[in-house]
Amino acid sequence: MSKLAAYDEERARALLRQVAAGDQIAFQTLYGLLASRMYAFLRRMLSNQATADEVFSDALYEVWRIAGQFRGDSKVMTWALGIARNKALMAIRAAGTVIHEDIDEHGEFIDSGVPDGYEQYARKELQEIIARCVGRLSEKHRECIHLTHFEDCSMAEIASLLGVPEGTVKSRLSHARAQLAECVGAVIRRRKDEL
Image (cartoon, rainbow, N blue to C red):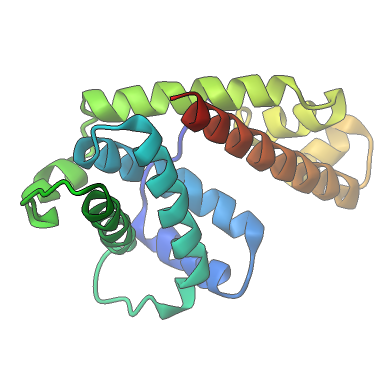
């Protein structure tokens, strides 16, 4: 998708509370807030893309799994990057490589809001994967994704536009997001296996 959500701490905290309650759609939205910076951070720590992809998936799963353990004494982004960093360090130790970096050394970059080369690369690559997977969706699912994420239409607006009940729109969106998540995961796994 060409539009990634800007980071907003209040929104991230609200979404994390919903994720802790098991809300998958909130997790997908939170993913949009965290993913590009987490991936850029991991690519900076890990020179191997396949390892970075694997650690990225593990870190996101951990965010989902322990969302209820967030204490609130840091930014959600910092907390998520801490999880990613710990996963990366475990991967580095398992590979026998030693690094001596601290997440604090990246603080200015992480919170600057200015994309660097790694972030731009990660964003472009993720956009290409998502665009390819969106293209594989059925017309009805693709339409709902487009109206929601590219046109910022509300559920009521989409329902009115398509002439279907809001529940149908929500169902289509849920199925489309699930298919996208499965497709993106499969592409990343396939790329990892090819390396």
